[in-house]
Amino acid sequence: MRTRCGRADLVTSGVAALLQLGITQSASNGQGDRLPPDAFSISLLLIGPALLLVRRRWPVPALLGTVLVTCVYIVAGYAYGPPFLSAIIMLYTAINAGHRLVAWLTSAGFFAFIVIYMTWMAPVASPGAFHNLAVGAMILVVLTISEVVRAQRERAAERRRVAEEEERRQASEERLTMAQELHDVLAHNISLIHVQASTALHLIDDHPEQARTALATIKQASKDVLGEMRSVLNVLREGAPRSPTAGLDRLDDLVERTGLPVTRRTTGRVRPLPPGVERAVYRIIQESLTNVARHAPGAAVTLATHYGEAELRLTVTDEGSPERGSLADAGGGNGIPGMRERATALGGTLTAGPRGRGFQVEARLPLPEENA
Image (cartoon, rainbow, N blue to C red; front, side, top):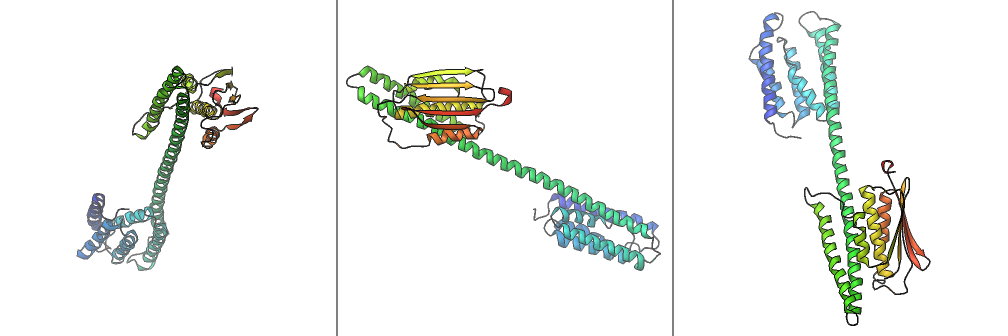
């Protein structure tokens, strides 16, 4: 809330002062039963507009002061005009500032004052109940309009708050997604580099040509990990393109880099996948092949993909290997939990466990109706 009067308050106060003085001066000519304007009435008519300057900082005192000045003006017997203008503005301000109870009670008190004054205190005969009802109706109109404006502002503020919370939630989810992408990229490529480096060291003396192949794989893997990390981190830059960092169009390169004998089987009606599902499928395959390279290097792998009516079923199965992986004791890591989180986030499921001498990962991911 603003604590100092600004240009808008100065304009509002000035316009209210001009209207109250000017219209009251003109209206006094036809009100012979009321006192003409004098210095005291002019000062009363100016107090209300002056209080408008502090209505944002002290809305309740300004409201009470304006209504009190208006009552004094009426009791003093001066000509009717628009002395209520400042009070109307103050009622509107108080309600929109959150002081609803004070505004309604003050309005009720002012209406009671009008009824008492017109019935027993006015210098001429009372105009009757119709006049009192008209004043009450005017007060209710002012209060109703103020309440409607306040409700609209609160709804707009609530919409902004919800939108900001949604933006924060999306930003949090995006950070988690980037962290998961970085984990998958680093885990796969670092594991692959470690396996190939171990192979190169083992073969460099007796089979230098095979060691050269392993070193070439290391070179390509390091290049790929730098490229993927750059792609993931680019989303942190303002205005950076938000495109998937991995898709099934790169699956051949992924299989070739691992150096594993992979048999691919695809059944069902093949069709394009939503970006989120395609990225999850790629990362699940990547993590599964990484685990095979770590724990069962050289094992034959079967990659089966079935496109169902409402879901995609992905199965990665290896036959096991008698050779102990160079990273078998490197710790469990977050590979399988990360794959399961990806599947769950899309409304699917993922199971992983031993199968015979090998290991199997099976993921079921729902497909939207438009893709079914």
